Length: 103
Image 1 (tube, one colour):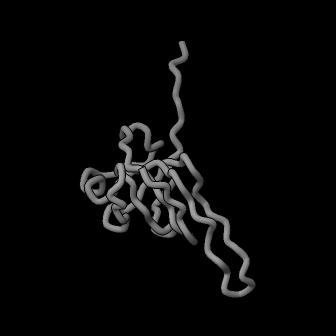
Image 2: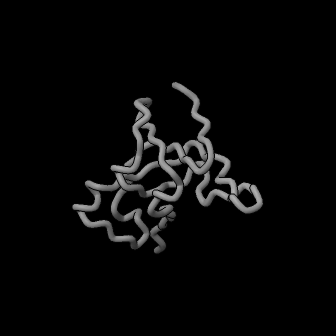
């Protein structure tokens, strides 16, 4: 497996599938599920440089985040279901909470 080190605001993720119940209240219609994909972030670039003061911007996603992205914006890296996308193209970070059955 290759090692990827994204540049600027790029994010490398591995496609995963999650249950509809794990979307934490976010309702994703069936048609939208065909146009979107979920993935687990495996690498994050350092962020964009500001054109005003050349300071590096902060990335909003981090390694191990579960993200929802448009399928047509992600570029397939042809390596173990890995894809790369610009951070600004990510729809949302899905916070999966573990529920316990209390009696």
